[in-house]
Each structure stands twice: as C-alpha cells, then as structure tokens.
Length: 144
Image 1 (cartoon, helix red, strand yellow):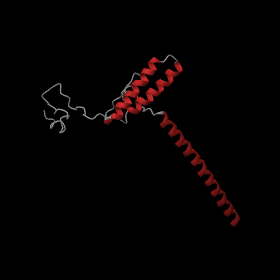
Image 2: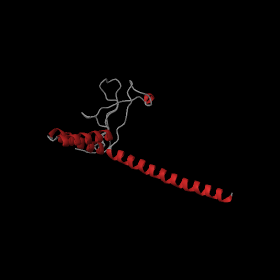
Image 3: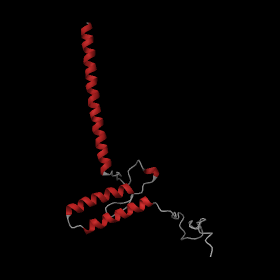
C-alpha cells in the first residue's frame, strides 16, 4: 500500500461541475477558520447557559452578552437576525427601515471615552482662546 498520493492535494475540494444542479459553486475550504469555529462553540455554550438558567437577572445579562457576541462575530441567533443589504442600497432606507449596526459594550465604552476626551480638549482650547483674546484686548487698550 502506497501513501504517495496522500500528501499531494488529495484533500482539495472537488471541481465545480456546472451540469450538476446540486453541486456547490463555493465549496468549503479543507482548512476551517479555527477562530470562527471557537467563537461558534463559545456562542453555543452561552446559549446553553442562557436556557439552563432560572435567574432572570442572569438570563438578561447573558442575553445582552449573546447579542453583542453574535453581532461581533456575524452569527445569527434567536436574539439576532441577519440583514442582507445590496451594495447599491447601503445609504438608503430599506423598506422604510433604517439599519443600525450594534456596537459591542467595549466599543461603546471606548467611544464614550473618546468623546469625553474630545469635549475636554475643546474646553481646554476655548480657555486658551479666551486667554489670548484677553491679552490682545489688554495690549490694544494699553497701547491706546
């Protein structure tokens, strides 16, 4: 028995046959995305915890966590849905509905921090501007 053919591409996906109506035009890669597989397993674990829990506060927390995790990883769960938008319609309303992308809690927190820093910087710059205007008015009054 020879194993010469085992290492030379024997795991490649079969060629797409257009005459076969059941053939998949986009066959799966023989090398799965392990990060996506791990994320899927985590999602399944969180969903099991949600369904096994009896405490409403725990369920609410898990539901929020599941929603954020599903959006981050592009998963569809019982709490999330998949919306497909055509490239030409991205900037327009779809059936009168505005599509909003949910952000994870970490991203929301980071955005709040950034806006807070921005507001503080605006306050600081306005204070500097006031000092400069006072100096200008002082020197213009002193010279006259």
